[in-house]
Structure formats: structure tokens, C-alpha cells
Length: 226
Length: 226
Image 1 (cartoon, chains in turn yellow, purple):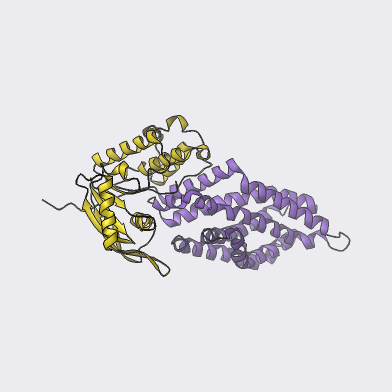
Image 2 (cartoon, rainbow over the protein chains, first blue to last red):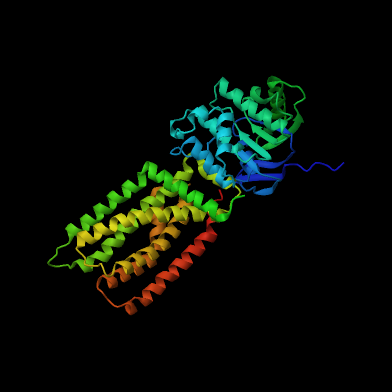
């Protein structure tokens, strides 16, 4: 059997900002159906790693290879406040060569935003913006989805919607990388966990039935030995 | 994957839609243009300075600074909510982003000029019906040059702390050649000089258009790197 080519592969990635090294020699590979959860304290380099993996930042050293379309959800929504939810999705769809009003409507429905499709984003709550941002990232049905704190600002009902989206992605064998502090939301979905300590990927291990407390205990152990 | 032009036109259309809806830069630019034209008009002593002596300078001071308000706004739109990341994640060429922003800016400046020009003719009581096509041609040529440089520099300064201050400081030195050419041509057109008198300046202005547009097109990608 032919080995499966990873959908996303980083090799020896180092990223510096001036003299400050934020990522040190990070290597990872994520294939379709993999769900990698990135764990790390504030400043550990999670956001920088996600941006490098997305291609928004060039690594100072090392390489990143992506096999297909990449979607990303970041701290910022990448949406235009003056446009409606529908207009935002339609615009991003056009940038991906998709001029499809039905697709936009389906994404609005999937994210629970169909009744608000014609409202300007400026009038949305933080949680609604976050859901729309996730919808934007799903528009092109990407092979790789990178999410940086996707549960920020979400109430329980919205968090359920996002978890359903992540489950659906996993079932459709998309490669998913999630950086989050809210481990409890994704630990049962994740297939592996990457521990980022001071910009180094200290370990990538299977989740293997561990809960959020066990994952954090392992993180503290790795951080103490770093 | 969208074609180069469909991506560029989608970006330009999005910018125009947002400006049409908010009218923030447009309203400021028009108020500014009217104010400058009025100040120049009332500052002139008609017994000492002829309208034709001051009109070309007044016109280009008005156009240049009014346009700068729009150019400043162009990439501010993309920095709000880090919308620029959304453009960079799309499978489109950075040059398509430049062309889209350039076309959006061109439309904005064109509308500001179209509103200001009749006011200018009215204030200075210029009998220029016969020369109007030539004047409009010169305005279009100079506008292409300064909007191209303005679009490039606007994308560079948007990540700086004092973007609105930095743009004029960086842009004005580049504008000197095309604006001097435009002032000279405007002066000759308003004086009713023959077309043969304009050829040298027209060639110069056309050269600036070609050089600036090509250079900015190729340099734009470098401004996107963090």
C-alpha cells in the first residue's frame, strides 16, 4: 500500500521576529482525517505556528508544504464590518472561484446565521462574528483547516455548532489543526496533541483517551523538563 | 481558482461597495476639495493675479490631497479585522490584490475629481469647454500615476503606527514628477496653447504612468510580507 502523503507538512520551521525566535525547529505532519490539537501557554508560539502553517508568515528557516486548499480561523475575523454576512461570504467565495449563492446560504444555515444573513457584520455579537469567520474558512471546503482559538466568545449553543462542524470535517477526512486553551471542547475530537513549550514542539502524542486534565498534566511535565 | 481579473474586479467592487455604504473617505475628500478650492479662490487678489496663473496649481493641490484621504483608507479597510489575511489565504496572485485595490482607488479618486472639476471651473470662471477633453485626458493620466504609487505605499504603511501621517511623507516625493507634468499641461491647456506645445510633457506623463504602474505591480508582493 502506498503511504498517504500528508496534507500539511512542516519541516524544521523556525520563525524569528527581529532577534526574537518565536518558533524553534518545529516539524509536524498532518494527514486527512488527522485532528491535531496544539497546546501551549500564552506566548508559546501557537498563533505564529498557525500563521506559518497557513502561509501567512514565511518561516525564517525550514519548509511548509500544503497539498490542497487551506482554510484558517484566527483571532481576527478577516471580515468586513460594513458588509452583510452574506456579502462577506459571497466575496470570499468569489476569491476562491465560487460564485454560488446556494453555497453561501448553506454555510449561513450550517453556522446558525441564516436569519442574520442580511445584517451587517458590524451589528454582530462576538460569537456571531466567530461563527461567520468559521463559515468563511469552510467556503472552499479546504483540505486543511487551521483554527486558532475557535471557541473564543462562543456561548454554549454556538460552541455546539462549531463542535459539529469539526466532527463533520473529521468524518470527511480533512486535516484539522486547532490551537486552543479550551481543551475540554476538542480533546475528545482530537487524534493527537502537540505540546508547544517556549516555541519548541516538545512532543506530539496520540490523545489516546486522555481528558483535558491529563493533557494539561502532561504539558506541565514537558514544560518543567524543558 | 478564480481568474486574475475576476479576483481583481471582486476586490475593487468590494471596496467601492464599502465606500458607497460608509462614505467616510468620500465625504472627507469632497469637503476637503471644496475647502481648498474656496481658500485658493478667496486668497487670490484678482487685480494682481490672473485666474489662469493660479488655477492649475489650485487644481492639482486639491486633487492630490483629496485623493490621499482615499488612498489612506484603502488598506485601512484590510487592516480592520486583519481582512488582508483573508485575501492572502485565497488562491489568487498578490498582483490581483494590487490591481483590485488600484482599480478601487482609481474609481474613488475619479469620482472625487469628477465632483471637484465642475467646482473648479465655476470658481475660476474658466471658459474651457473646448479644452475639456484634453484636460480630462491629462487628469486621467496623472491620476493613474499617483494612484499606482499611492496604492503601493498605502499597503506598506498600513502596518506602521502612524499610517495616516506616513503616507503623505512617503508619497509626496514620488508625486512631484507626475504632478509637475500635470500642472504644466493643465496650464498650457487652460491658456489654449496648441497641442504641439504639450507633446513633451505628455510623453513624460505617459512614461511616469508606465514606469509607476509596472514597478508597483511587481513590488506589491514584497509589501505583504511581515
